[in-house]
Length: 326
Image 1 (cartoon, rainbow, N blue to C red):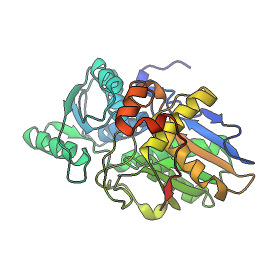
Image 2: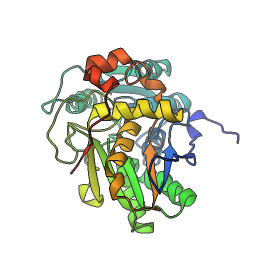
Image 3: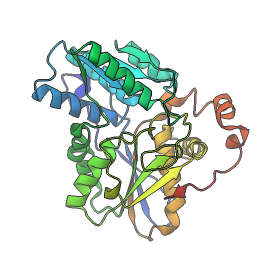
Image 4: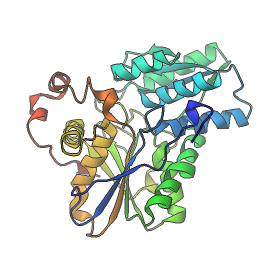
């Protein structure tokens, strides 16, 4: 296929069947990293930018600001470069060096906050910085991925639709929760067109999205230090919290055993699946979302020194404990 702009290349129909991961069931991993932005966030970014364009909020030469720990910042940088916008990404120290370098290579401006918010994360600080920036400069357009309905709608229209089109009957769907745009978009579509599907939200220990106690987190992707306005916890059937060391173990295992280096969010989703595997009936068809690939985590998740310094040397040696379902 021939496209006119890089940001229009949305690969939404790539699935990998992971044999042997679930006993007596079929697991399909939806690979979302096969696009120029390298993650599922390209669909979120396109949905929000196109919505702003339709509503006359954003026009050629416009200036966008958004909070991101990596993937959405890259996606918006790709779109801004292709469509002629100026983009400022407000981020924090948890962004991977590769993601930071790529955002800058794409021509975006980066503002990095360093102070943790009251819940031990950086999201509150990033949003506070954006509010200061938009108050001082009304011409800045804040897309606000945490509250923008266009974020979730993009995944109802694309991600969820693609799953049912390509896989058909789905017994269990596992989706990681960051802004919850992907999660809420999928629940909206599945509740209408596949109401029997059990939807499992996967979050990180230390995230407050689903009411858990706050704590420090080091891997970007899942989790928040304030509940996103998009989040509707009652729309999922189960929430599984995963400790970050278990996500790291799963990422490294997937790379060694399946030749598939993935990002931390995917590691969390598959660690969550492993923890509930004994409750999945034989013969089930299970879909798990893989938001991005592992190339941006080479100097973190796949770096022995970083892992040992961050989580201890035991993470490199021992099998992970079971995640806690809540």
